[in-house]
Image 1 (cartoon, rainbow, N blue to C red):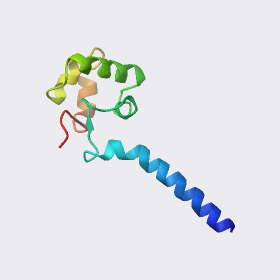
Image 2: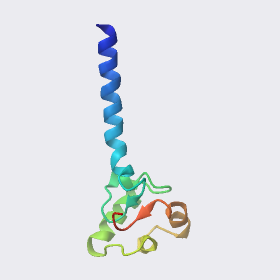
Image 3: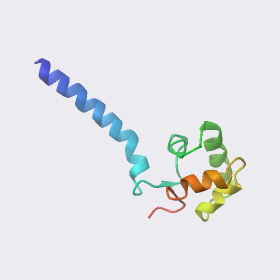
Length: 93
């Protein structure tokens, strides 16, 4: 009985972990900066809650047409773009 309970707990934890990882992996590990949640955006390098919020606010009126457009958001400089350019997309592929 103990083994079954332990297995159930491990399985539940694994499924929860997987549910958090799937959105980020949906586009082959890339993040669509036009549709990503704040939680997904903060997985980008050098992007915290504040910057993720700015990205979300910016895209409401100005959808990103190309990944480089993220540098139009206040606080996103060339360094942040370069660190993430392989991870971000603007359309689902």
